[in-house]
View 1 (cartoon, protein in one colour):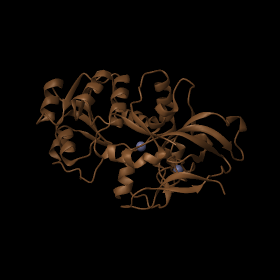
View 2: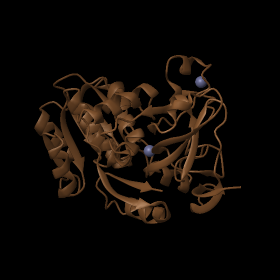
View 3: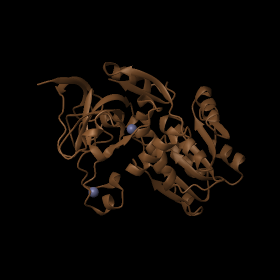
Length: 341
Ligand SMILES: [Zn+2]
Ligand SMILES: [Zn+2]
């Protein structure tokens, strides 16, 4: 049996471990990818810490995967061998009403979800359904596109749910990897963006990506008042990427009437606000999780055209995954860390 290195999830509260596992063979309808790059995501910390527990154990993590198809299973066109691809990480049942509508990310009986319930891309190879592989144009690097499979698609999906129209004031509350993608997508839709984050370097980056104003969360005591000052009446849309009780409360306070609060990031904190802040504004609170295959096609296209710029903090070898998680926990990164197996 040929083996490869893979970073394995064992269960909530347990550290990830690098193990030798069998190199997988593609089954019917599947391809095998030689992984070129896999983005590191905060969701993996939530898995490790037990905040996110989808009930499965003992699988390889990693859902922001790009690579080259190196083998195909039955019923898959062999000419796809050699194709550069990025992975859509939901494999819906394809029978339910959600899948029929293209919302595989909401499928209650998802067949596989690489990196969340089945083997993902913190490995040299992974197997995935062929239709989940989206072609990457030659001029786009696999390292750049890998994290867009999650951070970029999340931005596109949440942006659509928020129903942004040109001229809308959009607050991006949290300027990490996903936040910077949300910022760029909101600009693409014509939104006027205010970014809230920590640190001058990160906020300067937000300005360079098209934010009209930034708020340093460490320096400004009342970010909601600052948003009111800049916008006049408040934000049409607030994307909440931090998920702390205090930031969620502040996010509600900076909405204008009929504003939309889109919850994306979360922590161990609860969403605790007095309802009057939502009632008197007729505000909408929207949850956004993952994305559709269509969203992945859209973000690949936007990256290929230079509309959305992937932001890569650094690349690391697979063996240095723990160093990557430490840097993420220290909040010392700008954009995504990408593992290169
Ligand atoms: Zn992710
Ligand atoms: Zn389904």
